[in-house]
Length: 314
Image (cartoon, rainbow, N blue to C red; front, side):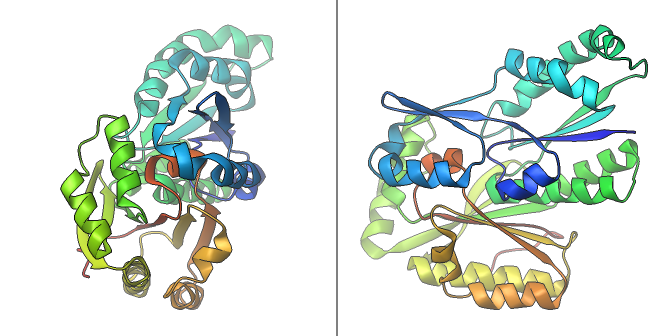
């Protein structure tokens, strides 16, 4: 069985990894002022856009995920021909309409694929599954990497589906933003009142940084730490501790809203890297997607891994 993998462009994994493993990317368009870019996981383009636009006007950006019709078209043009079963893994539905769009598109795809496959010489059925990763950004990468591992191991579609859906329930995404004023401005633009003016003002005045957690569709603060570097160090230490205790997959994903060398210079990074290496856990590092950066701001850090339920201890 030929199994295909699809992610949206908010999934923070290195572009080279996604290309090498044959992922299809559902892009998200980002418009700032009169300029529009299609987020295709191109690190160079993202960093260029960051330098020229995100810092000054990113909070006013408009983002547009693929519509139901666009997703349907992608599948019917290529995916129903190239594969027999496709897993489409999306950012949490509580933060984006991509999951709902893909799910709605799946109904049309399954109704219309037969003549397309038949014309290409395939008479076998086609199937697809849309999976809500229930998290975002780097943490989305956990499910995607596990899907690659299972496909390479020759596992069948039913086992892969069960594993990925269970994994989504145990994937944690932790984020530390640098600029709470930016985060609040962006939240207001999107009608999200999760970051209030008072908390933003106090956080900036006192240099208090929240540690935000994306888990099972909910995004909420789980700690407040004085100073960005200190917060990052505590998050890296927390992640290293979970690695030592045993993760549900041998994978940790990091993404950063800027040059990766900046992230690697942050306190605690080297200890985390060495711990992952010692425990045979693969560490993926990527520049945050353009979509992610316009939503959470320049210089934000996200860490993702799959683990048994636990509390973040600051």
